[in-house]
Image 1 (cartoon, rainbow over the protein chains, first blue to last red):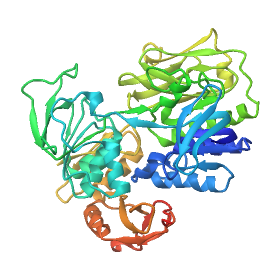
Image 2: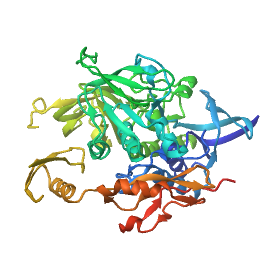
Image 3: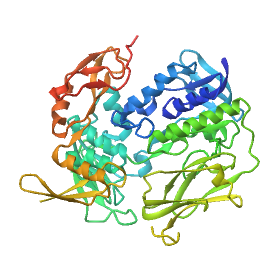
Image 4: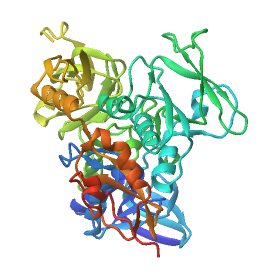
Length: 421
Length: 122
């Protein structure tokens, strides 16, 4: 078995892994290694051929491949090592990585620090328990996206899309442009889950109907999908009898959520947050295992790749500091708590030693409210929605005013805040 | 006639209401919370534009398809014609990001460019 020793090993060569590797390298880590299971870097960005990436980071509207290429080009000018077509099988508590590829067989990699950057995967039909038959023609939206944009196959000619998240909307446009007919996009919520811009440019531009407060209640067809039944749902998401409608189609795409891919993390004993399904981390993005860091969609599912890059750069830089013995354990640890209308906050724990960028999501939409961080900072928000991640930074000075050992993040109404919202 | 346009400039997504005259002229414009909404809705009414992103076939590449885009937005009404024009295009690997695949695409004064590097298969 080939044995390697590195300063920082990064698992995953998507946007998070790329940014983490570059930051670790910049921070002075001598041996940085990316381990990627695909035959090329870039991760899911390579199949996201639409544009709209990089508005924050590059002040330009790039396509997914363009966004990835900028990082890949930067990487080429460094001595960061990349192992492609290499699958990580196991990560241990003492930061040994077991991986395998068909060129070298089994590899044992000892790392002073590890960055988990495995991304996420899609929820499937099984997770939704859609009743009916099990014919061909039912795909997760990302699988269909890969078939169309990388492999060159169209999944079908007449499609229904369940879920109005951005991937579902983008696929509605993509299918239409390639000559398929999208009969309907079906969304269980009373509003579209994706960005308004995508509702306009992917649905309205092509007169694709959006059925809100509706879901797929039956699948028809034996060998190939022939139709789906959709129905309106009540406030408990139960189908309302009498509202059923049968739509003929040969393809059903599911765009119904993403799940961080943490089998390696939990195998190593990393403590996970049951809400995000990702690791619990501190303000250096370090997990419950010393020297193991996490960033990107394996940590929590992001809306914008720009935020993934930013988070991953911090994880990579702290991982390098840890590897170089420059990241002492903090004297104080403060718990971060999700308060009123906050579903989760990352990081889960802070030290008051450094500024902290918090990422969080709300539980339900609200308008004219304030985002309150333990009374240390309060920011006005014209509206908050579960589908839009909130992002706010506290400086060391702001943090120094914290009393107690908990920082509570919450949404407060204008009234409660004692100001006109 | 009233026309509703969702502004896509920022996440506020204002619904801008335009009153349109007989000759398509804008008589009034309301609902926008800032000046960018007015510019957007006016443009969206008079000459809507979209950036086209799609794929073309590539010979000898590590993938069978190359992602491409127009380097500037094109008239929204030209999207279908543009898709048909890309259907039969075949390029040869290797390709670098930004390489021009079609110059002056459809005589629109924009170029169709490659979205990524795509190496030749060994």
